[in-house]
Image (cartoon, rainbow, N blue to C red; front, side, top):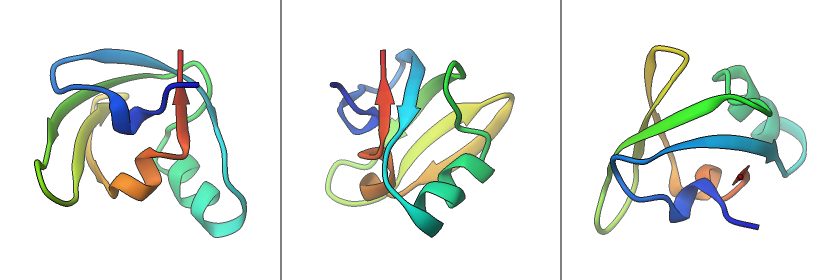
Length: 73
């Protein structure tokens, strides 16, 4: 399965699900990233964090480790 970390800037993808457990999964879901939501990837830092995305009209920054937990279609 492909994850959000593999998406290039400028792409819009649909979330298939969020893996992981406990507080990490809860933190991602509290950002509004849930199954069926469209995510637009604005920018990816070349060497480190973050992955900058737009979800439900909000601009957010994710750690690459958290982006790895978000499966996309």
